[in-house]
Length: 253
Image (tube, rainbow, N blue to C red; front, side, top):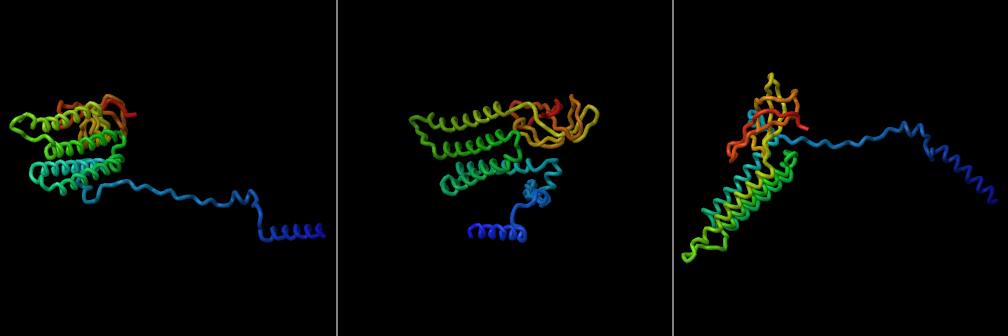
């Protein structure tokens, strides 16, 4: 009896597999089975808002300059708030402290997100610049409004220590930044070639202190349209007016 029952069970199992199609598929059928392709999410390229596009297009600039402009406006707002608090409304501690904290937080957020994406090559320089500007604003607030040293007739010279220390901090900060990140060249894209001269598009460059735009420069290398090139610049001593673009040194690696 056990043998007959086992044989009967095996028979019905085989019939069931054949009818219901249970079991392994043949290798040919497996190959013919279509594979479902996973959709790769497309990352949207950041763009300038439509209301500002014509403004930046007329100046031959793009999204990186738009981001840098937002950072510069935020830095100017931070400095303006610090000056107003120090000189005019020093009694409004809560309002201006909150405003300074909000502007500082926005600058750090902008640096970690949009500035990082806009200036990948020299991101460390832009990050250090923003941190330096925020530190300068807070140093001036602490020195001129919350300094423990007060003016005294017995020792009037002590009152000059905090402002001199603040000015020294600013000078040292900019000098260190210039020595660490400053350079006498920048990068650009060749837009047009005119004999030994070329028209290059240069983006804003904080390291060489070059303003964005189109420049006509001499070329000492064999280049073609669309090449990313290295361009020499002449930096003034103080650098207030920006560096002057000189000539193409060669293709950028």
